[in-house]
Figure 1: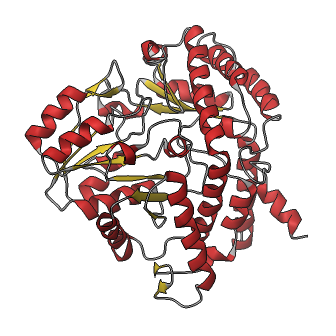
Figure 2: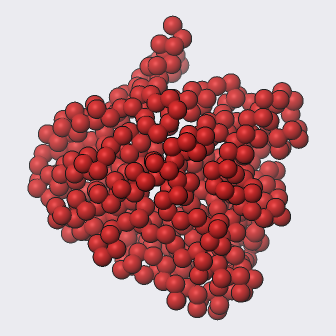
Figure 3: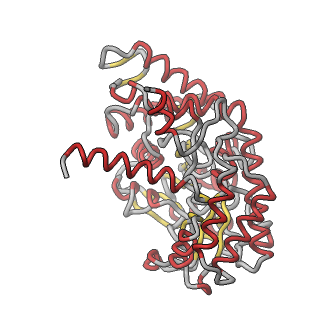
Length: 431
């Protein structure tokens, strides 16, 4: 196969991916789809350019429009999150976390965060960004019945350990974290709470979760492509100028040279869309997640935290250990075009990551495509048929594909588009 043939093979694989995923119910909690305007900006000439430094203070020429774009993106972020300072430089949530760790802690310092089985992101761990920074990580106490930080034990441990930073936020994230209580405890020993809002950033923006900065967190960092429906990337938000100066220095020249300028422009559009539609979108997400959780519970699934209404976020978490485990369940659902995410649960050993007890679901993307509470019953019904009733996934796949044909347009945005067929749109545009 020639080099040219290989290039067109890649193009064909992308088309096949787009076509297949357009027929799938995507319930992965860390993904979303963007609007046409966001996606068009991502294909612009900005993706070819560099702009080291801050807006209007660059080390490159040719940035006169780029400076204005980044300044607008920063202003929109400040307005949306009601904060004084914002950086749109991080190219991922993990880079945002590493920048905060680098700015506020030095190698050898102690930090506290949730363990991976209890929902902590890998960047909190010694095998991730925290370890790369040389930090000593202590696990926050966790109440697996409540699926949240154990406040009393955590406050006591903070007093004994005296960490530089307490990292709240999580990847497995059902309920708001105790920011006020742990911020008070951290300040008393000279430390601070920082909050990784990667999974719930869109819910925070829409006022449907919690407001970490107003509750005492020194910094809010996160991804911009989960419940927040923007391009893949990250953001750091704060109200303390000295802190943000340190974060900016950690980002450049520390961690990033160029910060992917097409992403910055696309983020600006997504921020504006969330200012316009974010409140309604966030509310719809939480309504749908609660509806899906209840419907699954009523059909016989072991949904975590029924005594607390199951969830206050975009996520729904199932214990499928009695069915064969998360790997088996997620693979079987994939055969039916239902895309989910196996996940460790608090009682799992981390060595079980290959086949954990849990299945982690998120409704942010299907909500973005216009699904309502009644559609959650359809999703739960198909999951029941595949996992509990032994129905052939190939049969269910046809029904899922037919159902998805009605949900191809992106909602809660300025200019909706077919979520999965932009490649064809761009090809037609150039003819």
